[in-house]
Image (cartoon, rainbow, N blue to C red):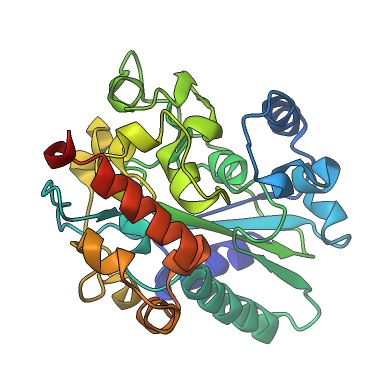
Amino acid sequence: MGSFAQNIKQQSLALGFDKVGIVPAEALSEEGARLQEWVARGFHGQMNYMARDPQQRSDPRLLMPSAKSVVCVALNYFQPEKHSDSPDIGKISRYAWGDDYHDVLRDKLKALLVWIREQAPEVEGKICVDTSPMMDKAWAVRAGIGWLGKHTNVITKEFGSWVFLGELLLSVELDYDSMIEPDHCGKCTACIDACPTEAIIAPYQLDATRCISYGTIELREPELPEPIRSNLEGWVFGCDICQDVCPWTRFSKQSGEERFAPREGIVEPRLQELIELSQEEFSTRFRKSPIKRAKLSGLKRNAEAAMQNSPTKN
């Protein structure tokens, strides 16, 4: 079904996705083994969902028994605004400046599945956007969307690593992409050298328990641990350091997706203002935003730690 595969790709691009690849639904044996080893070493921290159902996570046919194909998509989210280095201003990861990417990708994948069923009503499909037990980065690499960088993010030639990933499982066999994007990191160690907490313990290996993004988003503790707390450098939700220093970011292009445009006050939030937020203000300000994942208590904890460890306090 070569023409059908091409039509699916064309429709994906028409819906706003920036890259698309199609590969057979099969077990990710090597990738799954590496994930289990990573979990066994405790690098996932409190992200217990990473340890659940390892077989299902590495084989989409256990998630959808009729799956024969995986349509892998990437959506550029880059915005050109710069983070502030002012000690009283917090830093929020670019991916959270706009609306929640889960909603944006899910809406586009739903529209794609509706279109596919209009062409072939018998086709079954399942949408996967981060919340499903799918190895998004591994599938993106298999589909030729990009390569896995030493910081463990997928890097594309066209957009650097500023892409969201998603998949659509289909119950139909298609013509598949076989060209894998080679690893273009070479001898570069910019991301490893720049990480203030040394979370990238070796090329392609991340200890999430040392990562600022993990600490400020996923960690459910009243206090941030060392070395994260003393190396925040103003980050209150996520961290873009390893992506910002990557040489491939010179190819970054502003996203054409309106829902990723920065919300008012999101690029340079005042730390004191975040600390003083009420629950009602938090819920209103960050409605349909990824930032709600940290919860009010987490965001306040992060802002207080950033303020206490700012240059003016030392």
